[in-house]
Length: 185
View 1 (tube, one colour):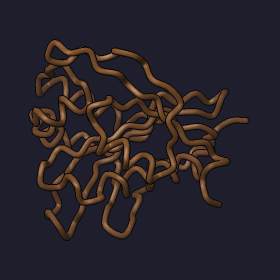
View 2 (view 1 turned 180 degrees about the vertical axis):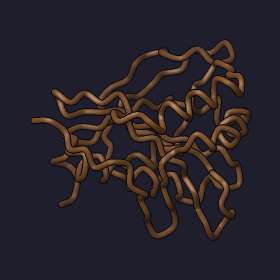
View 3 (view 1 turned 90 degrees about the vertical axis):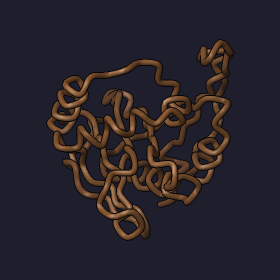
View 4 (view 1 turned 120 degrees about the vertical axis):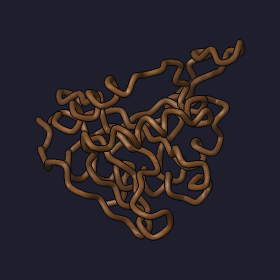
């Protein structure tokens, strides 16, 4: 069974709006990538030039095999992009994909926006795209994200022991997933 092609619609919840990432978002993405805490929580070691980020934003905006979204909370912080939510690494044969999220703006953390963004994108992946399984990796030093993922319905499936080297310490990475059969009708 193949996957549906629902395009890249705007996804709206009570407090969060996910809109397709655009090439014009490159400056916001660069600013987010300069947040040290976001880099730590995502385990991102690399640095990227503005030209590389601009090319990436343009590429993913045009891609038909992934869904990259800007997270916005219009009433709370104005029209700026607070982070991103991404459904990628799609395997159409097995109807599975990876999901990831990052809230780059420190004052937007711990407000439930990440949980709502995950719920919106996971529901979209299962209901509109037709995915059977959506998985993610989360580092053990990010309990806030683990709680948010559990609220959405993701379950711990295993641990990749000492998979991340961060500031000289070896950190476990947890694999979590949700199945379509776990998702409410």
